[in-house]
Length: 105
Image 1: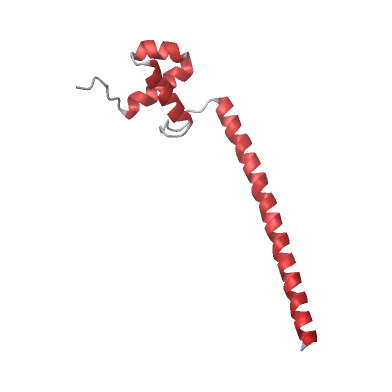
Image 2: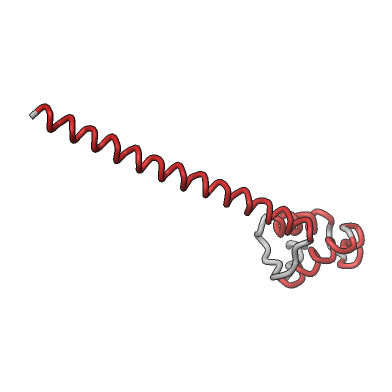
C-alpha cells in the first residue's frame, strides 16, 4: 500500500508561493510536506509546468522575462532584415539569369 499523499493544484500553488515568500524551510514546516516534494513543485513552477496564475512573478523574474523579450524582438528584427535582403538578392540574380538567357537565344 502506498503512503504517497496526493496534493491538489491549489495546495501546490500555495506552497510554492509560500516558499518564495518565506523560504523553503519555513514553507516545508508550515505545510508539513517533504523537502523534495516542495523543491520539485518550485522547479515545475519555474519551468511553467504548474500554473501559478497572474501576478505571481517576482520583480526579478519579470525583469528577466522583459530582457528575454527584448532580445527575442531584436533577433526577430534581424531575421526580418536578413529575409528582406535575401528576397532582393534573389530577385537580382533571377533578373540577371533571365537577361543572360535572353542573350543566349
